[in-house]
Length: 468
Image (cartoon, rainbow, N blue to C red):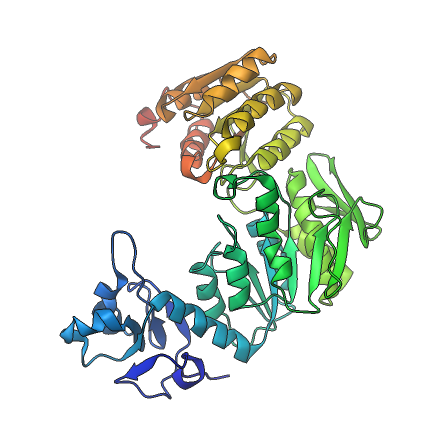
């Protein structure tokens, strides 16, 4: 379907130096990321105003640009430019994306949750790939800016659209659902993550459930029956399917760890994933429900799950110099750390189980207790050595030592942590890296892998020629 500005632009916008028949195929908020048939949307930020880059975007080939009327009135150099005048560019962008969604009418599969959004989306996309025309979120764009971009930039032949919906505050997912109401909605799991913006777990739960409440009437709600905050959800106006161990599960399933890999048991099948993490099997259960309801044959579905490669930073492992490095450093919450430590304990490890842990951010009033809980968990999960980075994880070290972990050290410098960690590693050791995105623990892994592979462990990151 060929769409033009007449089809897409909200009525309150005004075209300037533009034909209503002008074709637009994609949208960008970055003037460096434009090509013919691109609609540029300049947004105002804390430090920069995207309006200042309108001319640059147009010179690079953009077909047109939104522009707020207030900015246009004070910038006469734009008078001959192909513009769409509006009161607020963000609102205009969201409304335009919503209009395109309404015209193309793909089945919208919306995913939220405290953990597992991106992995679940990527796994479902891998299942659909080559079988059903679909589009998905750009990267992990899931907020009031990123989701509309993903929505607008979907392929016009998409039968399905798989989008993440994220939130840091109540009402944000409801707002996303007003832009595009889901036909299928999933909450992967609710746990202590980003609680700082919600104030309590009850409020966080209600915020996540906005994806159910904002779905269209008659929509399919996929419910994690093993999550105590979700399992009893009821909605007479929508269809509900539950998965998990619970007695009322429509799709009974469970996971196990076998020969160092997570296995999903569902529909009488044993599906062996390529991950050592049980979390992937849990996400695969949700994918199984959705894909089955979308008509994917079970044999094809099982094959896709078994062939799925875990994205970097989300629990995949590599061996270097006889040491297993587990990169789960993309993000961290209490629940995801607990899962990762359970997987570390269950993993066959000829040497020591070593945990490199960095602060969990945005936990608000739960921050202190959560970091202490991880220290106690290290003892229960048989962690042999604990290396912590960041001010909050000092609490983790204190609690771990008092709970029986004999080797636990705290660092405010990654260089010093790297020096001590690398100096003590031996073949057979398993090292788990886990921390919040802002702590960037992955910057330790690549130089360590290089040093281990060359069988010459350096005394510091700077000596290896790699910065962290």
